[in-house]
Image (cartoon, rainbow, N blue to C red):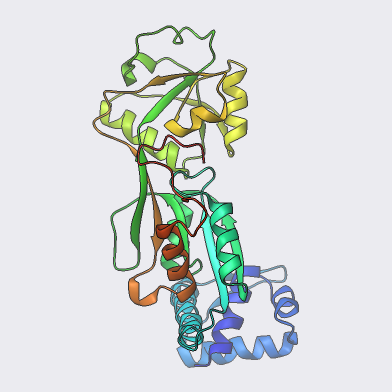
Length: 308
């Protein structure tokens, strides 16, 4: 099995089309097809179901995709490790992050990293914490800044960044605004909620908190970015339960503490593969994060009070 066969296989799986994959790889379509056939002969299993419009993975193909991505990530890490020993950090840093993550100023961190390692190409992807954890575990990302979605495994480890309580945000004219200083889930049972998609860390935290309290809630307004959420709350269309540092983004809103949810907190982490599979670029980024990188400190206080 040759590495180029795995590279070709992954490209076809991603594009679901031989012609588009061949164009992206800058190889002939006949050569790409021959490469996939050679891989299928060696594995003695069909990897794709081919139709006139697209190709889809078979069960064997889905099993291979996970391993192929991991193998190529390890090969890339090996090349980068050798370059690092030679005193030059090269290659690619593939980073993922959820929006407005607490505990790290992502743009400032990447600027400091580029200043120190100009030969490393930086790639950034923004999505929900669940998807980020999957992509780090599969080797598609070197690391990610996300909400802690699970305990460490043999494919994923975490470095804690910060933790903070969840806060209720509402319009100043909302009935809850003059409410007692502390609210519990029971006080919010009949409210209209604005929230993120289920893959986002804040949504997962809130869902878990209300489930633990035995309180059902309905998310009527579902968004995919922080500012849309704040706009909807600002128009008094609903309330939101968010990490505490979000309150600094819209000071005009009323922020109320949320209690009675066990000790559920919003914890953000840097997600990395196992230590042996962590790329030199990812190690350098984590080191820069931990030391502040000469930028005056990259992480906010442990209570998450800094607007990030």
